Length: 470
Image (cartoon, rainbow, N blue to C red):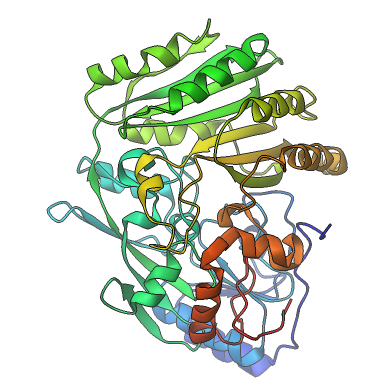
């Protein structure tokens, strides 16, 4: 088994004059170990990640990003790119290299007439939704408000609105990209269309995306929230949930979570978002709300921004996190049995197992239309161990891996790029499976836009004919 969540250790000797020249070029800060703000800047959402870059370029504009990319290429430095810093395997930071930090780039421009929004690479989904909902608009975004728009979009982007509007990447209209050779390109359906295809599911392999333009949609109050069911009814609830999901209208998308309730007992939570007429939504949800005697039923009309903040209150930053993720075609009886058996032995009361639907609209997109090719999958399956004491890592990681192994006979074999570490951590075959039949085309694009594999701290796509650089 490949070592997972390992440190990224490549470091080239830094030339003092080159570092000074970079610092003079940047409008933002250039931080080194010992500088004020360095310790804060190197921290990411997952407290399990403790890496120490040689330099952190806190970019404030595209010129800063271009200067940082040019510097890294000239110095042969390992590069990490940070948007929101929420990636659980910690790809947003590295040991001994350069972090190109976009977290200060927060510009958002909404065009309510054309129903579009342009947002810079450091924007978080909570910030984006706040800006677009001021006009009654939104697009499919992450289910946790402090997730960055950049990472989520580039890896595909599952969210509450996926049933009506598809994945986040399906709503991307254009992207501004700084490529490995320092060019600033606009990728869209009419400009660099090959790159535009690759950005929609190919992760951060092709450059630093400094701005995203999205298609927006009218989104008013939604019928949404969570219902919590007792563990004694877990199998009955999961079977009913599966059957209910087979005939969902586009207006509805769901999440199912195995978790520990506030009383300390395992439980099943069903989360829903119905976007449309709320009276019709109540009729649609009636079968789901009568699956059993819910311990808590908080499904109600609410603002979309309130829904987006709901899950984040349960999954907080600064904790130890370890994940395994894949896709499922179906929530079969054997899968349900395996999930219930595994979660009954959960090692931490903070840990969860999540089933998130891609959504009807997302499923209807042809597999070859974007780099995200898992269009026949109904659910993303996520096993996430969460704990507080670093010394307990082995036990909680072991619980996650045991569940992962038990579910291997049932998963699609692919993986969600947004939940994956590097090739050195995951293994070559698993990375290839994450891109499925689109991998060969993506490798050709990598040869065009990043032939030296400068951007490799990700679910890496090797340039055609290259060797692995770590």
